[in-house]
Length: 592
Image (cartoon, rainbow, N blue to C red; front, side, top):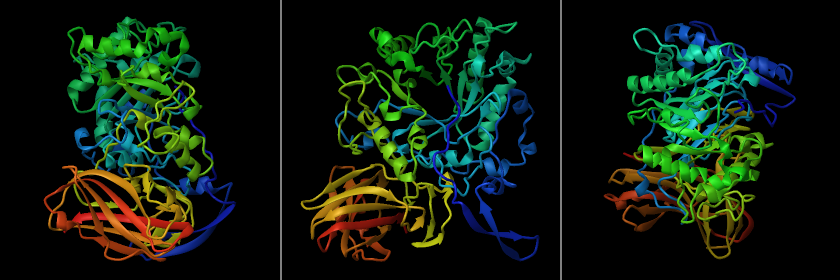
């Protein structure tokens, strides 16, 4: 699998003047101006910039936290959030289910090397916004020329954890043609006399030190032309390596890619078979890897009659393996939603999926785009459906039609406790705003400061006369780089409701809810509450939205004792307008 992507839009203008501040020890901060052009922007922003790490096996063996000069910058500080239980979130459409999970193997940075831990002055970044459909994210990287063991940059882990998604690093043994070396595999699998695997111990130490959740093992080095090619002994060593890893750290995840088989050769099965089952369970039936990512060819016409995913599910049940710990690989790196997929092989006639879904390089949405708006359009088509509405069931009629992920997978949420404070910040922008005022005109990205974004993108219900649509708007924000914009035709007094968040939060006498809003016409704003008992309530705001940012409060404590399961906003403009717009810049819910 490839490890690179390309940037698609400009990082900065032809020239930019930046104010840089430096503070000497014990002295005042001095400010000076420097002009930056296209030729030296990269040099300037990376000067003295910490870098996210990457290693070859021998380098990792020599690594220690004490010797890591950039350690403080590369540690994720956000704990993995608890997610709402599946049975507490209602399905958005009739084809969603609780069992099917999603693994995203994504190129979050454009190369293995040269990555700043917390972004740069560029809006050109894969600031992913559909975490609600992902159960596990693999930070894809590694190359024969840079390093083959790559932990996630901390901004990715921060954002994943904030959304309740475990984030894994990658161990990538390239194919021979891409520079793979048998000695790297053997160094990695070397066992000490005491039965320990030093590299396994290092992988655990790195993940615990940096604060991420495990590793994806991608062993594709054939070694066919090597003097000592890989054999069944190496396959057995891989099995023992993963079993040792899990014994040392049971909560640390490990995922195996369907590549090397029990004889040590590379022979993609595209299924769980007798050739690769040893990497999921040993001879005694004890578990080895947590999950397996199945190669992509199960969807090819020449293999269709083997119904490989149904066969994988049957094999898993025979071996005592959860079929949904198998991820059917779909390679969308090149063609995204134009990738032909035999969805009829992914699910049975009853609509029940045989396995979980593994998307390889959903970062297509980013690399195919020329702007942030195009990026979000691509993401909505890939993760939701052509209508960009998760309430629409959209099973493909043919393999030329893309079934959005929301067709099979229910939305999830990491809002299980208060406070909830969100500025709908996607983690990048063309400006930076603070309290509604633009304080910087420089492009930027930093996934560490991205907020929990709406669970439902987008569910908008228009009353008669309204035709409003929702989007992220990078020209207005309360804090950060963007806000949610509801725009289109509005009829006087007609209501539009936008569903925002699924949650599992008890309301108390001290619970407060506020929103920061502005609108092109005076607008009544209400909070739409759905409770876990199925009842609903509309809570009117204490003021109307106007032309400037204002805070609207909602008296939700009147519903103390109930548990909130969904939160939305309802609006009603005071006059007709063909180009009406309301911006939602902040939502804050807390106790006390």
